[in-house]
Structure formats: C-alpha cells, structure tokens
Length: 172
Image (cartoon, rainbow, N blue to C red; front, side, top):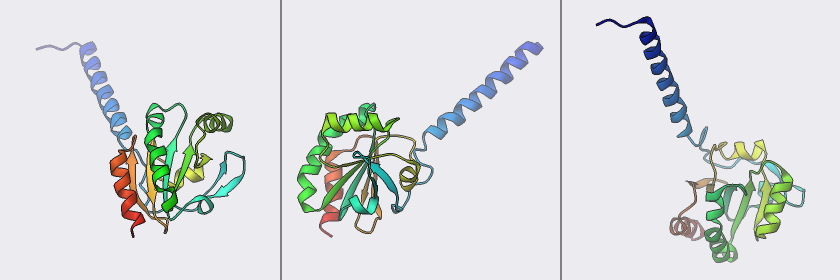
C-alpha cells in the first residue's frame, strides 16, 4: 500500500488537530483553578460605588452568587434566589451577589432593573481569587460564620438542595 507525502502530511495534521481539540475541551471541564476551602478577605465595590470588605456584608450564613446580567442560567435562578432570601433572611442568611458584567455601569443598571434586596458587589480579581477564580457562571457558594465554604454549586442551583444546605448551617 502506497501513501503519498500529501496523505501522510494530511493524516499527521488531522491527528495533531484532534489532540489540540481534546486538550482544549478537557480544560473547559475544569471550572476552577482550585476550589477554596474558605473565603479569603477581599474588598469590592458595592452598587453605590463604595468599597466594602466581605466581612462587612456577610452573615452567620452567607450565600455568595457569581452572576452577570447577560447570563441566561444566572437569570433563570433569580426566582429561586429571591424565595431563599425571603425564607432565610430573618434567620441570619445573607445573600451577596458578585456581578461579573464588563463594566460597573452595566452592573448598576442590572441592580436597578431587578431591584435585588441583597448586597451586590462588582467583580474584581481579589474577589474572583477568593472564590477560586471560577471560569463559569453562575456559581454559588455557601459560607459559614467562620468563612469556610461548605457548599459549591456550578450552574443554576437546585432550590431544594440549597434549602437543605442552608438549613444544615442555620441549625448548628
């Protein structure tokens, strides 16, 4: 069987391309550089333009939500997020939303339109690093009073599962 140089080059090119695609796809499966065990202190800008520390806005139990106005899955979880906020705010749950829109003005418009009843911060590298620099949104973190991350959810969360995780922390 005889292969021309063109066919050999073509075969090698196809194999190299397949290896490249496989490596690219496998890196997208890793949502985090590293999932942190606790939240390191960070400072971010709230929607009033003020700099605040995470410690100033967190609660006994804190649900941190990484989101953006352009993200369909993020918007889809808003009704469940509102229900959870209403159900557990009086028991000590704080919701802290970190917006990952491209600019602060877009984040402010999102806050004004949706009228979120919880704290919304604008992303920065310190905040993203505090949560393992995830490469996807939405991502949800449940944080206890000692800043330990007890639950991480990638994608729109399951309301029943989230309620169970919150109940477990609030009763401790």
